[in-house]
Amino acid sequence: MKTYIKALVMKIANINKVILPGHLTERFGIALLTIYLFLFQTGLLTYISSQLQSTPKSISSIIYFTYGASAFLSIFFVIYNQEIRRIALNLLILSLILILPIFLNSSPIDSISKNYIVGIASIFTFTVISCAVGVRLVAQYAIALVCLMSIYCLLDACFLDGFTSTTGRAASIFINPNIAAISLLIGIAGSIWSVKLKWRAAVILLTSGAIYVTLSRTTMIIGLLALLSGMITINRSKIKEIREGLKPAILSFIFVLITITFAYANNKSFGVATKNALQGLISANAMWHENKENTLSPSEESRLKAEIPVSSPNDNVRILPTKPETVTNPTLNDIEHTNSAVARAMLLKQSLDAYKSAPSFGMGLEKAFKLGPHNSFVLFAVAFGHLGWIIIPSLVIFLVLISNSKSCIPSAVAILGASFFSHDILLSVPSVAAIVIVISGAISNSFSLKIQIAHHQKERVILLVAIIPLLLTSIITFNIGNISEKPLNFDINTKDISLHMGNTYYFGIPQHKFSGAIRIEDSRTNTINNQYGVKLFENSHSMISCNSKIEEIVFQGNGKCLYEDRGIVFSTTDNSSPIHNNRKYQLQANMTIHPLLILMVTILFIWSAVWYWAARHSFVLEGHKECAAS
Image (tube, rainbow, N blue to C red):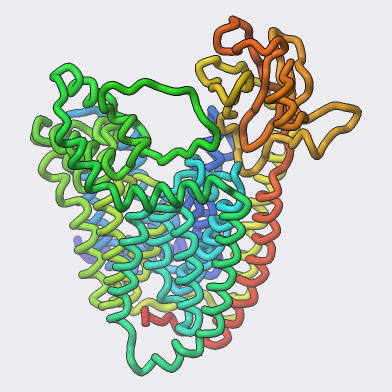
């Protein structure tokens, strides 16, 4: 029976080899990995999908094709390659450990659980493909993407109306600054080994600058620990080669310093957010004790526990004064705006209380996710019960055992540390893609993997990897350009209007679709035939166009307004209060391509050219070797 099964497997493998020749499958695998990493690791697909009410068929097709083709190709490699079968067996054991608790839970499989299952499945399939086509090439591409996204984050900090969902904190197309920081950290920890020693300091400095502008305090601390742990893996014999990287490191530091300096000068909310982050870090402990000492009535305590945000708390910064509010009792939202560290501690406590009262096999991922514990250990414990505590340790232990090398320590520290302060580590698409690279690199230390692509095919493969991002970006940019031609129209809620001074009022424009890629046209720079970019309507009648000076609005009023800093400063036609005069106000704004998008697309073309040159140069030096982590 055993001989029959083996013969059947070999027969299937030979058939597949005829249908899909070796060079074709490896090139197809690299193309799939390129699409996956460029769309998923960078957060690009998440950004596009989050900006639209329904995912377009083109985007859905890319998602289904990528996942479906990766499943088929990984099965092909498992059947065809004996070494890959050994790797797949280890990955299968890990996948079963991570997924099995979902099916023991009595709750129905919700959307969060489905995303989690798809994420674990993608770790299996894309790790198998990565090991089959060459881990070093994939890791080099991943670290190149980390550098690209680091530059994007630094540029995002320079603009008030960038991609970020949290004013003052950079995130680029990751949107969420915390996810951006964690994805960059895990990405560099898992792929830095593929960079030559003399370039590593420059890459680390560039990524560190990007993590700094996200103002994710916990990720900064975790990154420092990962860096210190990585120092023990450095071979003393290679100190000389590291010293040769002093010049690139200095250039990288100068670039980061200039960009951050410009960010402070051009984006005043970045300076405010930085100050708040530093103050919050210093005062977090004192505020926690102060709020802990406050005695709440049972009704207030139940109201506090009921305020469970779906998304992560953000330190929003408001530039202009807002409507005063009377706060009589501390609520979670009040504490969140004052200090996010204290809010996280309270959310963690709520989640632990939920864990104690939950069934033995948990209450499901969706309910656990809504609690927002900011801790992956607690998230899975609430979702899966007692078995949930083994999810993150299983991943880290697998990483250490499969690597059998000290080189995995920085990655293990990054994943472990991020899990303590984030519940998105296995739920966020960018971080899952980064984990694929981490596991692939760890596997390359223990298994004798060989690059499957023939040497004469390498240049074609590198060119393919360089072209795919350009094609995808061109398609996406073209669609965004079409969206920018449609004006922005919405009614203003009087609750969102606040008194600025005298008879002058302020309305902060909410983040619009594709913020960072398109922006509201500046009234002061586009005045063709008096058709200004921003118009304010009072009871459907157009007021004086938003091109006045702030002094005119404050001292004269009578329907003057000004668009500035993602908001409208205005006065009503009779200088009455728009909050109480029972009139309807609408905003109409023309949209235009954001200069940040133009910068990013330009940098992408330069990045692709540099990648093509660097990858060719790397292969010429390294020949056919698939080097393990040094």
